[in-house]
Length: 262
Image (cartoon, rainbow, N blue to C red; front, side, top):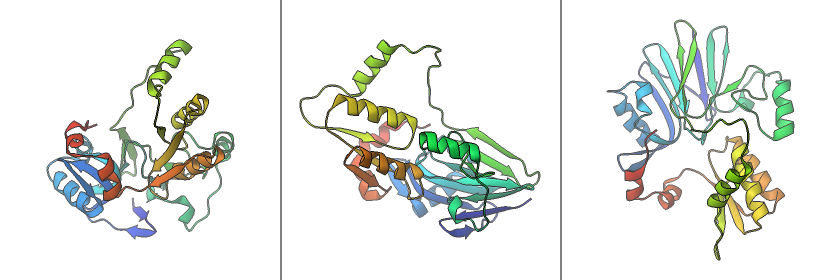
């Protein structure tokens, strides 16, 4: 069995114990980016397995490594970066932009209808038949001997599964999210997902001033959906990349000590 990796418009070749990392991590009180983070992660992997790695790091990233005839790959738990894959005849292709693949793909009609109805797709399916998207906070491992792909979540959101909706309880929750204030304005992290769209609707109903922003790579389609949503309602929207300058505004030394490792 074989694999092919195409990231940032370049083919990535990994030797055994090879590693590719793009993004940033919070580790031991420091923000590390790209090559620095890759070096640190490589050192961690000298003593722990790839599945155990995600108990010790937190950030936004693409992660790919080769260990003992298994190709491991993952993205961060909130989808700041994206990875896509397809498996054909037991061979794996891993990439970050389906639009740049040289061979043409048939459309996934069901998912195209979903995009037209909601503006996004659910789960791993994409608009292309046979191409799947890596779920955030999930580690995938492809066995190069058997051609079998397995996955395991390393991050879970906790939720309550109730059959009926208590609107009184929901109102209390929403009120706590957006308390009344005499001054200032609300700021909403906006994406193309259901959660932030719900919060956007709540803020619009409050008739209070607010602005929106998005994090993520240029290839993250949530960023582009958020821009269109903000424009539709004439909202000030800012786009942020994961740079040392931006992250230093949101993290300080005390924050590092309080970070919850997932």
